[in-house]
Image (spheres, one colour):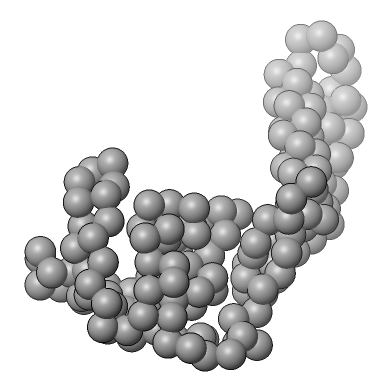
Length: 158
């Protein structure tokens, strides 16, 4: 099985989420099931069925996170030698040649991707188009929403 890349920060966030599910959410759901069970007839008890469904979803999420962490290859970009090239985990400041705007992205793994926060997956067209490029390079990237033209202004290992 192949290892899935994840940043050190992403690993910490997944571990926090897993801990919360196991030690906060799981006990709450158990209490809700016990309380609903105390109300009597389980066949027509909507609270019981809702709590059991929530329990199933929570257990599935716990399994998903445990599996993801077990198969993660944690990469700490701060430990990589700085070459000026875009690598996994790097934060890149780009200048959009079409809109005359600057934007920053951090190249991360699929598990921690959040485009609204500037965290783009290494597997996206933008991520793939930036990997290996250097400061000063002009990059033309085909995306499903059209062609993007950037100039790489800065690459940081933060």
